[in-house]
Image 1 (cartoon, rainbow, N blue to C red):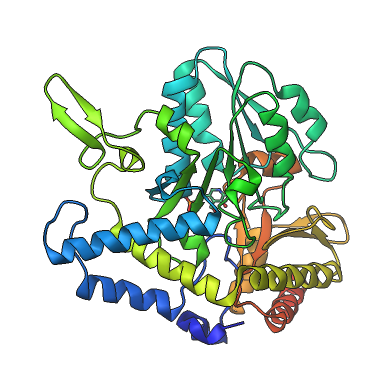
Image 2: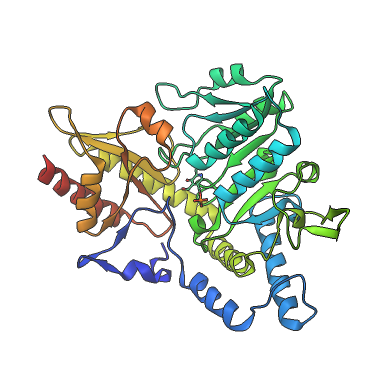
Length: 405
Ligand code: PLP
């Protein structure tokens, strides 16, 4: 779908056609997005919010239009609830600091799950260390699904936040976040959703989900690097202190003390990435032009096709096989004697055939440890991937396995 919009897909790797299956790490950019970067720096570059001059006003308008666009894209009630950050990692660190300062004390608990990305583990570990709080982990069932019964037993009056991924960046599986949110809310516990791998693939609506916070990154959605979102319900953001101090986030600064700006600026210290926000808006226009439902449907079909094809390769084990996935599949290949072929070796031989996949722990070491393996091979899709590419990948995989067996 729309492959011609992505110039990088015409690249050759080692003389072979590039097959890019590393979209969970970052997506490629359509020409519209690439052009928007050049256009913005060429015609509309001025620091925002501070200038009375024309360029500054236009740049400000574009930044705020992008904020409105993001709000509408994820179904937020108001653009005040959209904080621009550097990306998912930055959003989670900001939230961990800010929420930690506001409501977490010694003995309190934060809940994450066993399949989280390091970005949704380490900031909470750091907070727990700072505040002598306790990090609790939702275990997985044999099927590698979140164990909801165990989750229920973890929730208590000591729980200050639940933070879970909507879609696992390793397994690609879609977690039952509606249920997770509902169960937490029954005990007045707020929930943060790591949407880094779901917002690019599924129509996500924060009001429908009723999550309290949601984080995502533009670069995984055909947009630029260095910009992302921290969504928070207005009532929560009003309650939380700023995570960083500096220009823009203040109302007045006196030696006696500082008063803070209104939402969302209270959380945006310093010159924001206003070119990034504008270009992110262009990426959203691009996605909307194609249609989020269309993208979700095509990617689901492609994922199912790829899993079926993978399972026909001798020795392949797909993790969380048979579960519904959004955009990513992890697997390994075992020899007839049961020995695992190291994922790195397969990844290297695939690369030599022009196929870009990711191998290793995918920034989710606790999950990989739990699986008792050194890592996986992960293929991940975007709107431009095709069945033909899957077929080429499968042929390349067969060849790699033959060479390594
Ligand atoms: N959370 C998940 C589920 C991810 O997949 C990723 C990136 O792969 C992140 C968080 C971190 O995103 P970023 O590196 O854009 O901050």
